[in-house]
Image (cartoon, rainbow, N blue to C red):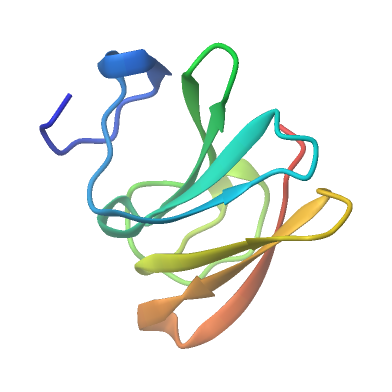
Length: 104
């Protein structure tokens, strides 16, 4: 929308807060975005432009887990595995590299 926020949805109804890096899935069906100041990894389905939160809560922290039970602190870099089953995320302010499953 041009305004910061943490809103899932289609097209310009979705909001991000300092999206930093994008990785495209090997099959080209989706992209993952490090949503830095929402402390989340967001997934965009290319064909429909639907944005969802793959992992993270919107609050900073260092918690492993699936979906919204995981916490990040300024995830910035995202790299997709060759088979697309996981991504490696540079969790900047936690000073760690995290593996995130891509199934949602």
